[in-house]
Image (cartoon, rainbow, N blue to C red; front, side, top):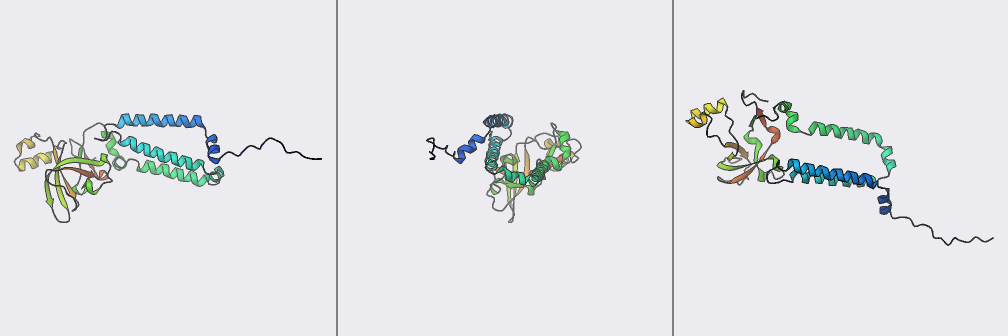
Length: 237
């Protein structure tokens, strides 16, 4: 007896990329993409005035995070699921640790001073020491929402450091101590709470700073070192 081979050709094996794409749940993928796009649109509308001169500051950072997350998703999907099943307990434990770190480190200022939450929407007095203000050109990685802009009114070169006095568009905190100092120097208008349309801050800049008197300078702020005070009593928050 002779066996005859079938005239039908065997189905070709699909390329790995095509097989991978066929396994995806495109309905779920589309729903997630729509949700992400809606989230970016919401972030753009809510934060457009939060950072002066850069309406898309937070949108760009969210988009970068989304891109990294999508790349991580593709990497995970390319791994054999059996590997994840074998390592499910360590993966679960690592996820819990990362979530706890996000909650613990998510908001440095409010976590360090939980009393600030009670002053939301109210006016408080802000203070910062000179050593926590630096020439932004020497700290290029400082985000734009952690910078101040001001006009340099005095520059004192002290060798190892530069003491830069700069005026910013902010009301001077008129506490009793400030009024007493104003009386001591003979500024009666300031002593009565008048003429305080801008405040002068002092920053301790590095010796490589090139700021000069009259310059418009950007100053990097160490926000973790900010000090907050109750407006009327002057007590620390």
